[in-house]
Amino acid sequence: MKMAGLEKLISYEQAALEPETELMLIENGSQITLKPLDGLAFLYHADGEPGHSGVQFFSALQEAINLAPVYCAGTHLLDYSTRKFGTSSLLHIGEWGPGISVCQPPQEIVFAPELTVDFWARFATLNTGGQERALVDRYRNCGSVVNSWLIFMIDGELGMRLNTTQGAVILQTSGLNLAVNTWYHVRAGWSEVQQAACIFLDGEPAAEAGFEGTVRDSLSLNYQSPLEILYSSLAQNVWLDELRIFNSFQAEPFLPPTAPTMPFSLNMPKAVDSLETGFNRAKWLPAGLCFLDESDFENQGILLRLDADDDQTPDFSGPLLKLAEARELAPLTGKWLHLEFSFISDGDIRPTLSSGKINVQTENHILPRREPEIIPRC
Image (tube, rainbow, N blue to C red; front, side, top):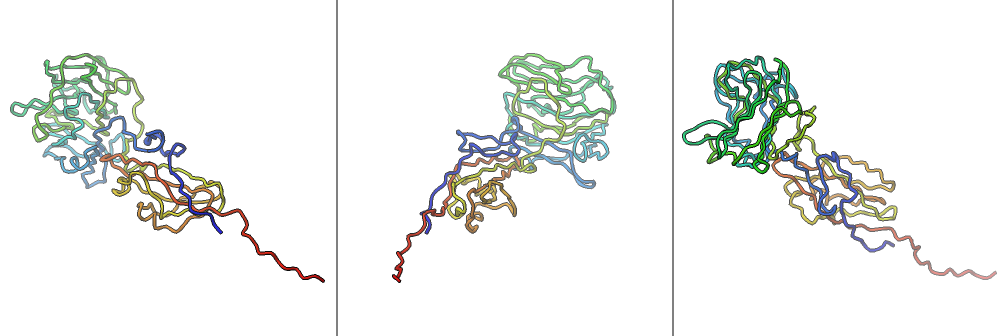
């Protein structure tokens, strides 16, 4: 004889997060969600296989980025022999024309009160003849539209130009002593809230300044205001790799990244939670598995696997399951039930796992009543 079915609540106070740097507990441990990557709004890897474009864009507006990039007719290519991370870097050969233009930048970097632009760059020559050699920018005149910012190199020094409502602000380094054919990590950003702008080289401050007003931006998201990568007419070979744009102001010294930033779709963070009945051989019923909010299960932003045992040693195997598929599993037996949740995202959405419940039956440890035996007398 078995006891009636029970209902076990699923919360996440003790859940193991893997990697912990990408997942966070919220709402007093009742929910788990992906962390924002420090406000990462745009990510570009110049990676691919020989013979292919290899251009990879990731953004909070994934669908817009997939449609938006325009590879202008210019002198740029992927260099598989010279890269900082991955398989290749973007090389602009110089002479004239653009590298890559993204004609509709993600909304998170348009009209943003704070931005940080972060990338690796390498220069074949440092002499620009006193001209600004554009590295990354949204600064180009088209009719009456004045775009907002430009990060550049000029004769071996780094600079940033901000077009504000109070006029142009130019921030420039001095005495960098850059070397040719060497990878440098460049970070430049500004904050309208703090009225401050700064440039970092290899994680150390290189220039800083204050400014007034707000940074001007384009009137619309169209061809008038592209995000441009290595767009220049200078006869100078420049390589760029791992471009990141954050919609936050990062103004403290830091350690440059030692590996490429990976979107969640490649990392697939996991959260593991375990439930206990207190009884061995408990029967867990996946058919009764449900969650307070199942929208991220329905859009396959969260997939799961289950395991049960008596010794608290989960062994997850088999394919990742949709919630509907998990509910079709046969009952699982054990003192412990283990749940593994995989977060599937490319930055377009950040799935959130809400608390839930599952039905369980436990063994009755009271022996069934036996009828009295009649013992004959001798």
